[in-house]
Length: 346
Ligand SMILES: [Fe+2]
Image 1 (spheres, rainbow, N blue to C red):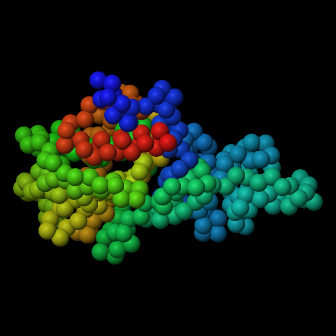
Image 2 (cartoon, rainbow, N blue to C red):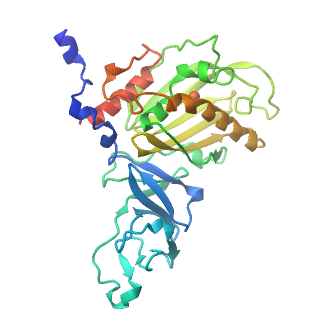
Image 3 (cartoon, rainbow, N blue to C red):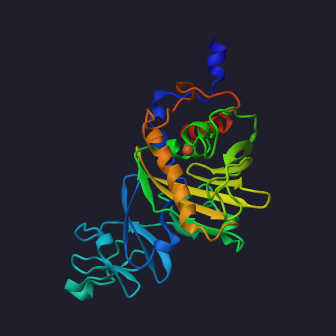
């Protein structure tokens, strides 16, 4: 028994168990805004409990602490003035690098104060603005090639927040065996719940796998390659996944011989038990059904919400044996969980 216990390399001590949430805080990129929704109106964002302000200055996204260095006012209540962020309280102005460039009550002090507003690394790619709370993110932010491909059209849902941990939310997307139950008649069939074997591999910061075929139904806009959907045919959808450690996922799901559906999801923790979700849907077919297409995504999301928010513990256990994994079927979930625990255990 002792040898068996020792072979469980993922079995962590108590100190490590408490650090799972903290361990992913500084090492990765997290989304803070949709590109097309960020302009020169400052936005307040909470990430890992930190109050941040996100704004576009001279066209470039910037992320700062949302707290004026003078009297602690939220800069997200301020405005952009001549390419700088201006505090609403006393008019202090911050340049894009966080330097104080104007103190209106004593102009002669402007430019002399050395203190700088903390600015965080910021990048924009594949329709999202990202920041990192640390200085050295481990991997580049996820990039979605289809996003730049003119054959595809991408639309996003509104940003939404669920009362769950990041890992619970992300796992829901590649937990195939729930499709037959939570999405019976749409993404699965409860009379065909078996999950066939598949393989997973790690490549750079990703877990890649292909699974299926899953019985999907063509009486909805996503699964009907022709715009005249309404049939009740069943077809076998193959799903190609890339899970970007620790917080994003791209899913390509076949909707026909050449029809490709892309689900592009990226998550950011508000706190350990609340998660902010960014969701794009892309496709190379059915461009004349925008409303139905987005309504479909909303339907599936609404079906998942009570399920995921009910999961306990809200954060995933920091030890593998604390939950059961179905051999073969849960392989991707197991690999994701293992990777998170490796990060926590570094
Ligand atoms: Fe689901």
